[in-house]
Image 1: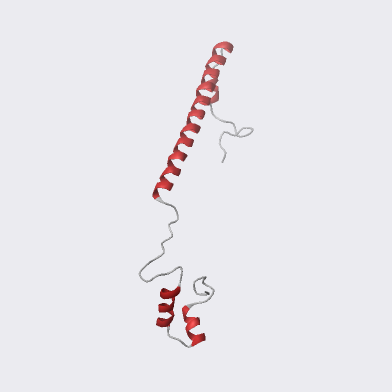
Image 2 (image 1 turned 60 degrees about the vertical axis):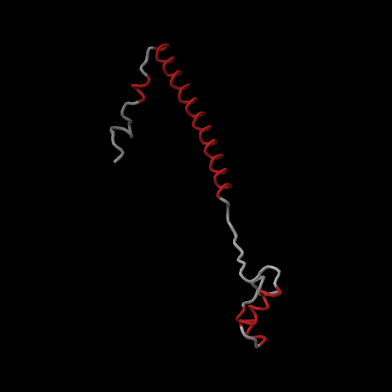
Length: 109
């Protein structure tokens, strides 16, 4: 049926066959496989529980990434401490000093 597949509208069918819209609606409710009177079809995009499970999974994934990044930071800090002791150089202080933006310039503007 073209109405059910949304190929045509009830108004178009009404004009084409010279029948009232009410008659078409009655026919749809009587003979349609997809529609029954008083029954509405609700399409739910994603259930709340499915969405919640997806979000929990994403949280676990992000927590894992954070843990890996923290381990990397801890390792790098230990390496800096080791290098400072081994080479008697204050790497953290030099790293935090003002950046040079070119010859004779200290400001990017």
